[in-house]
Amino acid sequence: MPTLAEKKAVVEQITEDLENAGAVYIADYSGMSVGEVNNMRGKFYEGDIKYKVYKNTLMKRAMDEVGGYEDLYPHLVEQNGFAFVEEELAAPAKVIKKLNEEIEKPRFKAAIIDGDYYGEDELSTLAAMKSKSEVIGDIVGLLLAPVSNVVSALEAPGRNIAGAVETIAEKGEE
Image (tube, rainbow, N blue to C red):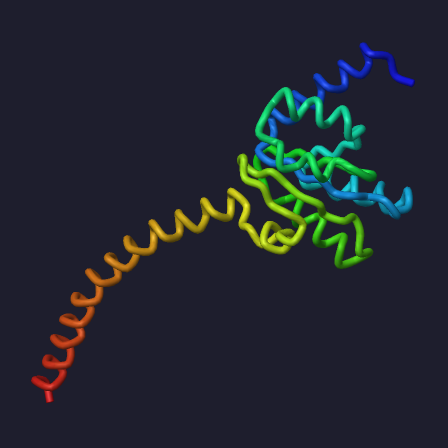
């Protein structure tokens, strides 16, 4: 059994994880084999997602210290894994959804993303969210589209006039 000092150290680590995370996901991994859990950990690792299993009581203590996680308290039962992510806030949802399609586990319970609560029925919505880099790409594309449209519009009359002059010149030669 861990000592009080060891528990305090774990709570400090969880507190640090919570403070650095833009999103925290809770997934129930009960019923998963060791191989399935290891596969899931690998997928989280590939997505730059920190995945940890903590005791629910220690997680609650850390959440109390940080504040803003009260909506997750009812979900701190059973065998939970916690996914922490800093940048790509929808990445854990995408991993969980893909695993659900393959092996129907783990069970997504809830998430806090930028302070907003998302329940278990919102996994598909979260998984469909674009990543930060995709959103930036869309914005850049939208900003560049008017410029290319203006350039095309400015070039078009010149081409039309040149074409008309050429046609008149050809008719004049006949």
